[in-house]
Amino acid sequence: LELGAIAEINYKIPNANALLFDNIQGYGNGFRVLTGSTTSPGRLGRTLNLGDSLNDLELVAAIRNKPSKWAADSHKFQFKEVQTAPFFENRYDRDHIDLLSFPVPRWHQHDGGRYIGTGCFVVTSDPETGEYNGGSYRMEVQDHGGSVTLASVPGKHGSQHIDRWFQREGRAPVAVSFGHDPLLIVVGGTEVPSGIFELDYAGAILGKNIPVVSGPVTGLPIPAGAEIVIEGWLSPDNTRDEGPFGEWTGYYSGERRPCLAIEIEALYCRNNPILLGAPPSKPPHDYSYMRTMLKSAMIQDELSEMGVAGVKAAWAHEAGGGRLFIAVSIDQRFAGHARQVGLLASQCPAAAYMNRFVVVVDDDIDPSDLGQVVWAMSTRCDPATDFEIIHRTWGSKLDPMLAPGLPPYNNRVVIDACRPFERKATFPRVAESAPDYLAEVQNKWAHVFKSGD
Image (tube, rainbow, N blue to C red; front, side, top):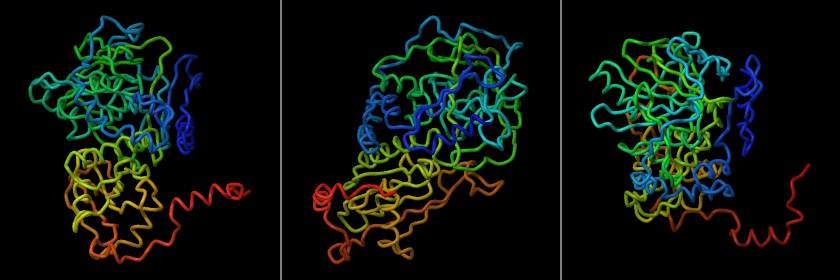
């Protein structure tokens, strides 16, 4: 529990350090936990093979147009099979499984258990096409370390694979890595296009083929660089009560409820393994920064690919977990332009899942600056005419506003916070100096503009 609190405090520090925990009480030296692997522009940029010298805006600019290129190039970087991997240094069969032999934290004070899967990479396959998927899901240790639940998300590719296996064979094979290159939680938590395996997508990012081994139990491709791995089977009637868990919305996920549990056939780990932790919580949390950077670039890319003119920038705010609150700035070119951009942004693939607010602002507003966005909403928006409500859209059971027993729809609003198009020429002038003049004065009087005590 203390480990999770240390990580939570650390996330609130701008450009927070990564933390590697060792000598954890109750465990020997060499059983380690890593948090904060992508919480700064330097580490995230390095993870994405974009360098480590960029600031936030530069990183989003560097990511622009990359996701579509990575997807297009993924066939050139299909995973390559190798014969062995360091995680085979230690092997345990189904009668000797103990996930609590690793220092699995109780990340939040009111979690229902200890979650080994927060930064995990879960490999599934489609029984009909043979395609693979890699995703990141929350996974709670069960049966005193002998099993683990897998809280897959309905509608996601991995969940679709599992359902197809159930319909066809009555059970589904699964392999899970609990420690690996942080790039795998980036791609595992990103909307990679259907039909593209996340390991191939990661290979395109790195410019090299990712080595894998074929799982001895399931035959699924497992990243050879993994630290801790399990293989096993999911069955529709094999469930355990799971939760609650502190989620990325900033709330606990509700009461304990039945969840699919993995019947673990084998456990492997390398010597001195590192468990990769990426616990969510009230933002900022372990992956909220990463999601904000990626989503901001992807939303703008998708609007551009739709042929929408005049889009200057998009920002998926970290305060909304990188999903719930999106701002888009535009150069208004015609009546209805702002509404068009807002409606498309609210439903584009990168933003469709669990989005709640899309705010469209003029191009004199920095969409990454929440203060400027709120100012535009407060002074350029009439709630009677500029709010567009969309009903029954793609939501989630994680939504704290979802009433118990209801299907996981959500509603969302597009807010037109641009100057009315018909009043662009006559709308009151903004009461501030021109940017070039401000820069000139700031340079001249730099000795004055210092932080006070």
